[in-house]
Image (cartoon, rainbow, N blue to C red; front, side, top):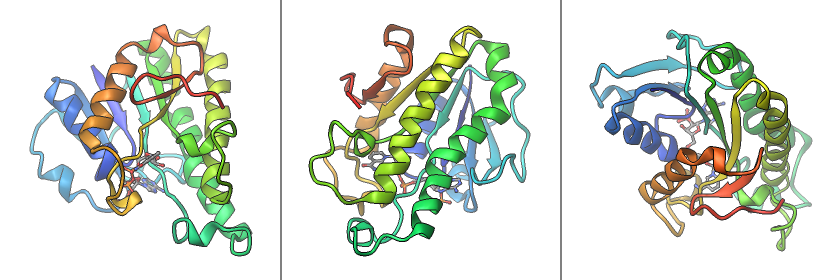
Length: 223
Ligand SMILES: NC(=O)c1ccc[n+]([C@@H]2O[C@H](COP(=O)([O-])OP(=O)(O)OC[C@H]3O[C@@H](n4cnc5c(N)ncnc54)[C@H](OP(=O)(O)O)[C@@H]3O)[C@@H](O)[C@H]2O)c1
């Protein structure tokens, strides 16, 4: 089984990489700059790829010819967490930067890997956030992050519709509120709990409606 994960050098992405290596998969682990945590894993099942998702192709490393799972995990929160994204502070520059990484990034990574995904009748997993759900938005603010993650959910739905006939399944996931650098290690769950849950959802991907948005615990999220 071939799996490619973006943003795999820390946080949820690194835990995904370790999870699938433990299962015996070949893992293409993408990093932007720092690959020390991945190099330390020392296994020949690991293929390192330097890929900033704002660029259309990797800087270094070979891509797989066939791909069973693409996990578009790389993402940023944007300026200064909650405080920098209030109505009074949010800038056009910040809106565009977060959109580029969180929505355009997954789309262009998908485009680059499409022949490999179609060849394997593989699946695409886009990591969004409940903060991108309009239905779930009861507290406002967080303009850049919410807008970019909402855009990813709808982009993912279009991918799901467009690729169904080619045998490629697409799902959007919410990892939960997870203790990582992004949350300053606050949160309700560890990356392990999040990844254990999401990998179960991924295992049953075909049981969910086309383009569904699903939490790590299997709950379908309205958006
Ligand atoms: N943690 C949560 O509670 C939570 C909740 C909902 C959704 N999510 C989503 O889950 C995903 C993983 O988040 P996390 O909590 O693990 O965050 P994290 O610890 O901050 O890790 C983010 C990862 O994305 C990579 N990345 C950022 N910009 C990139 C770019 N332009 N190109 C390539 N890689 C890039 C980072 O690489 P560098 O090391 O190079 O910066 C890092 O590997 C994100 O999409 C996030 O929005 C997280």
